[in-house]
Length: 101
Image (spheres, rainbow, N blue to C red):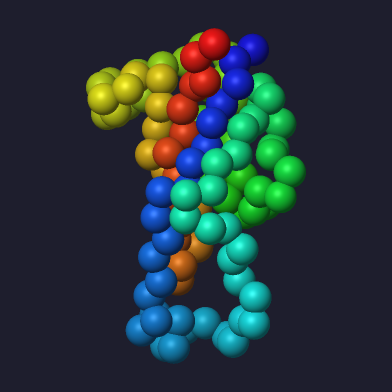
């Protein structure tokens, strides 16, 4: 099984949507841009957001077991994926890739 690297590429925040639809939340997301997490196979990295993991884990599992070329050539690196968590108010984009040893 391969190791997988998850890099936090970008965080967005949609204050207009938050003001209109979200109940106030004091503490929503701890993930920092530039943070790197290494998955040993298909195990959630320590400290990684549970909600983001639900979105990313199928791709992490597939890459860990050798899958590549998602969606017929979507990514320049066929052993990677650019994914976002499912938070519509403050989505985070992650670059997920196989660690070549």
